Image (tube, rainbow, N blue to C red):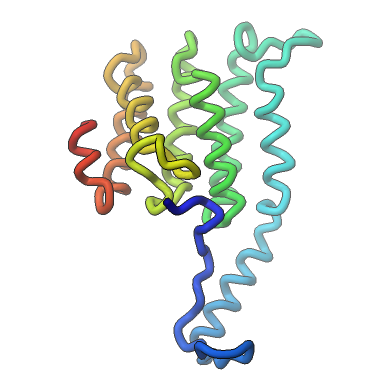
Length: 199
């Protein structure tokens, strides 16, 4: 199975010679590659995204100095999820963004914030999950959780489906249904049989 580290975000361009270390690049391809490199260089956030996002997620359940995000200060927990989703938007399309998306998925799944008693937190969790599914390429999605290193379609489906079907808040249900529909369409080419079974 392919893992995140195997994803080639900048594949060898057409026009490269096959042998040796000296290659010949045709002008249009060379200009295209230069443009991508310049774009990556301008997005300095991707180099520091981990340093910002990981400490925030690590201390989400911290209690002290009058702070309790899991209970009384649940609005901050929702804002934390929104911020993490924004990090993916800012660094999406790059390897760092994909890595952060996997981390955010594990966070949402393991902390069960999609089942939080406050609808605001659940809504933010669904939005974060939606951003995860938009950031991780379809080639890194596997039908089940048995394929290590890939995003589990089954886990994402079950989490969003439960909210879309059973959540008491209408907005949460609508957001989850839309996120699930978009995710199904994204994965339909190579996971169609599994999608039909789970739908």
